[in-house]
Length: 380
Ligand code: GMT
Image 1: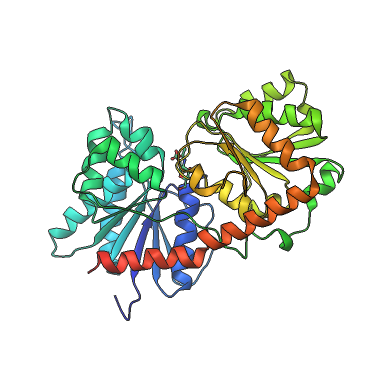
Image 2: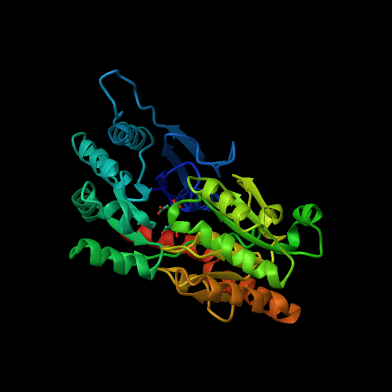
């Protein structure tokens, strides 16, 4: 560490997903504040631009060998972490999503001990690493072990912090909540042309959903909510992203007769320009530790109708910035959506409240400062 400037290694899932997006945005913001940031992953994180001062990318190469039906990525990652820490004299490794990143970081740290070097390991818990995958019997004990061995633990919501204690006991853990964030300059409705509107037409309201289309997102509910809203208010549904349940969603749109008003755009990295054309965001998930896409929508002045699941209640203020209803209660979510969309004045007040609240509680500058303070405490 020189003059408070840190050398930080960041590991995340580099493909689509909120944890990878957040880890990348955090790394870029830290570099902008003068820190040196080293991303260590099997692929360049999707939100990482080609060149940014003080940002480096180290690819993890998982060697192939015919004996390995399952190449041991966790070990290759540990070795790369160890090498990068040694070569660049990193102060800390900040890993996002516990499995297997926290385990690999622990191995790297143990290896460093042999050469008399140390590094602090901070693990940020994002969601299913605690609520689903980490509780699978195959992973429970290694998840508990790895998070207990981390020098610092953060969770993206109060809900996830509570879940961590419930699922793992972790009597020695001290989990600090640091929420996800948005860059208010990027998630700003007024910055973008409404190109999507041009395709859909100005007379229809635009409902939007962005995700990786996994079962937890309840894509059938999205189509059903849309179909109900469309019966009352002429609308279009824009589905952004891709994943295992995309086919189910497409089929459901056909079976409900709304396929001509439903647009599947596939994976798109920059979502702010799309959100700027949206009137309402739908996130009726079964479980959601935070709901980063909901926050990005709110910051763009898009009211959110979501399920009352997990940490979503920490992001969406029911009746103020959107509406929260019970998981699976499609009629209630459709009704809430119609109430927001029907009256232009009401829509405008919810939209303004959403953009203001996102900036007041989740601005990048404030949250990144919380991470910096957390790092300094971890480093003593
Ligand atoms: O937890 C996952 O399955 C994936 C993870 C991701 O990489 O997108 O999503 C989680 O982390 C996001 C970023 O912190 C949160 O906004 C999501 O709510 C959370 N997903 C779930 O809890 C299902």
